[in-house]
Amino acid sequence: MISAKVWVKTKRLLSVLFLLIGVIFIYKLFGFSIEGKNENKKYEDYFQDSYKIFSVEIPQELSFAGEKITTDRFDIKESLDREILTNVYWQSNTLLMLKRANRWFPRIEPILKRNNIPDDFKYLALIESSFIYTVSSAGASGFWQFMKKTAQSHGLEINDEVDERYNLEKSTEAACNYLKQAYDTLKNWTLAAASYNMGVGGLKNQVELQKTSNFYDLCLNLETSRYIYRILAMKLIYENPKKYGFLLRKKDMYPEIEVRKLKVDTPVYNLITFAANQNTNYKILKIFNPWLKKPYLLNKLRKTYFIEIPEKINYSDLIKNIPEEDLKFIEDAGDTCKKIN
Image 1 (cartoon, helix red, strand yellow):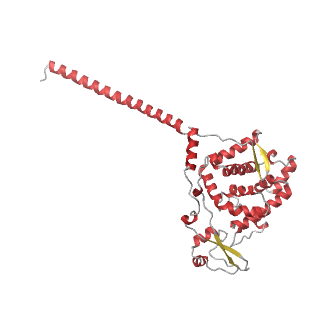
Image 2 (cartoon, rainbow, N blue to C red):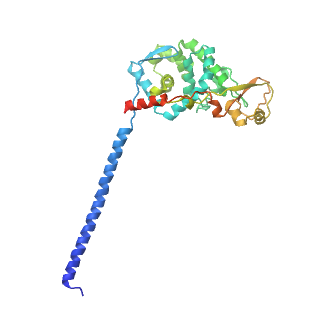
Image 3 (tube, rainbow, N blue to C red):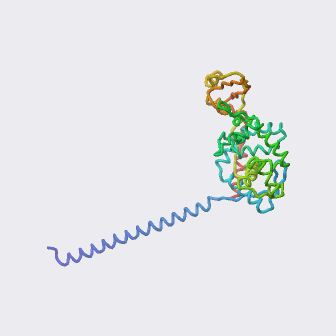
């Protein structure tokens, strides 16, 4: 049997042991809690120090197609602010638009010039499609997003084999034709651009109803109201990307791709074989000729078409004539970051 004295000592030791275990448990419990709070505080501090979102400066004056705009009025300034911020902070989309524009603007610009359409209308094509051959929910297609009926009324062929809304040169010519007619009716380029979204007839009715031919004074539906500001925002960003945080080197841009044009005025029964005979493949042929809807071109009416074949497709060949830039670009970017911090 355990003596009373030993039992008392044992109880004391057990009491001390349980007390020690309790102290350790409480320390661990509250220690982790405090440590967790400290970790959260560090995270919050780091976030506050590192993550910054800036508003942007809105220019006092700018222009579209030679027509000046002042942004002193609150509704104009805030509408432009919305579109600039939307594009500046949708970085991936805007970055891709800038890269693609480097490839396609050089092909669009001379067509606009030849038709006496202001150069700024290239930004209309950019915001319409982001230079993706896409189809809208309403059925508008191509870089210029033509509806089928409108496209055909401006000379574009659309049938089972061919859809010239996807032919860059022909669709740009059709857009020029539309814009010239819109300008003749509406008498200024800003309204002509807005009509591309709303239609000439609809916009003309609003001009007459509201008794103003100033786009910025018109009360229009939300989509058309935003339309011109979207064009202006992309123009500002494209003309000065660094100002809006887009640090693009020349070699980051999508390069122009030189093509040769093959005249075709007879049936092509197999475009896959046709592509192989031109030392390319059907996929590449379709990329450069998205207006061809089928893997053949029966061409029953014996019309003349031009099929584009790229001269070079390897990136190393496409960018080899782009001069290597020195470190100044990166240093400038670093200096900008230092000023911000």
